[in-house]
Length: 138
Image (cartoon, rainbow, N blue to C red; front, side):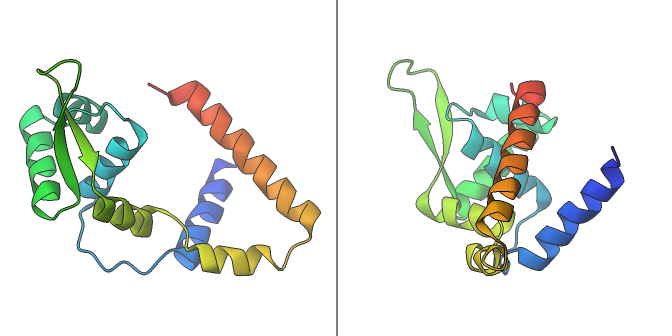
């Protein structure tokens, strides 16, 4: 399997089909927000572990996201010692624009393909996601 070719295709797709980025975010900001989005019980300690940074650095990233209105902290209803990081509605929108493909652009491209070709693409992406989750899920 030519993984370099897959990466070239992946980066071309993102380059051609991404949303216009309006926010000034660091790569670590985006990674932090992704980790929060994908893990409903994300704590600062969890983020430090996932991002492989110190607890202090993770806490600073969260503080900056809170200051921008992209995240908030919520105390657990069952364990008052646990504090979770959650994305706000604005944070969800910002994350979408900084990580996903532009739905309108993607629909325009997919509309040029047959239903069978569209299904083949969906099947391939679903298979790739399933295997990635199997190998790398926490």
